Length: 115
Length: 110
Image 1 (cartoon, chains in turn cyan, brown):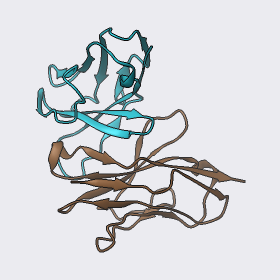
Image 2 (cartoon, chains in turn brown, cyan):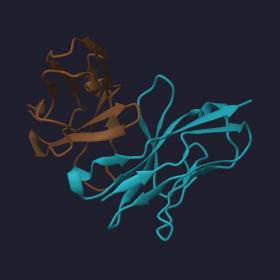
Image 3 (cartoon, each protein chain N blue to C red):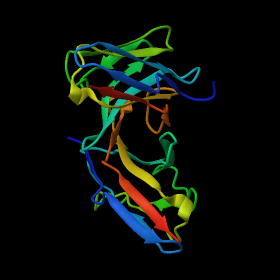
Image 4 (cartoon, each protein chain N blue to C red):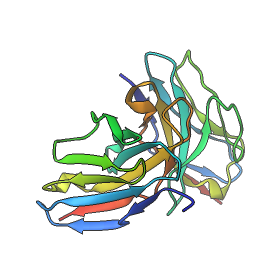
């Protein structure tokens, strides 16, 4: 594919259920970032991967959030026991590497609604 | 701590008028500054970065370290410029992750 792909585009889930959000980065991009876009909070950084390693998880809002990346490619963001405040658009971005002025390419996002 | 402030939530201008979207930042070091744009129903995309010192779609932005600002300017706004604009800062922490402002919605009316 030409760009970063995220699935699903939309997800409605019941409070307390677990959800998995998927990100397919641009082929060859070693760096991958997850952000959350919510009303009032703007765009918040969650976690990044360099290859399969996540050196900085400080942006994850709680221990219900986790992420992994396999094969230096696909990444999954998992939210356990979802709460209504988790409702947001979750964005994934990838870049050639981690470094100054490296352009980040964004996916179209997954809109998560917790009811 | 690093912070990006975009004071205007919404900016409305007439077609052909000049436009300036404000961005101020705080960072103890030498940050990289970016402007990202999100058109309706499209994904977030890079508009320009300060290091390039280029003009994209007629937009320019100059990094003013004294005023810690990175305002986005265009002399003659077009209707197709209507979009959400985000100023972002990247430093050495968190793998150069982007720290975004809350965004300014630009509406250009005929």
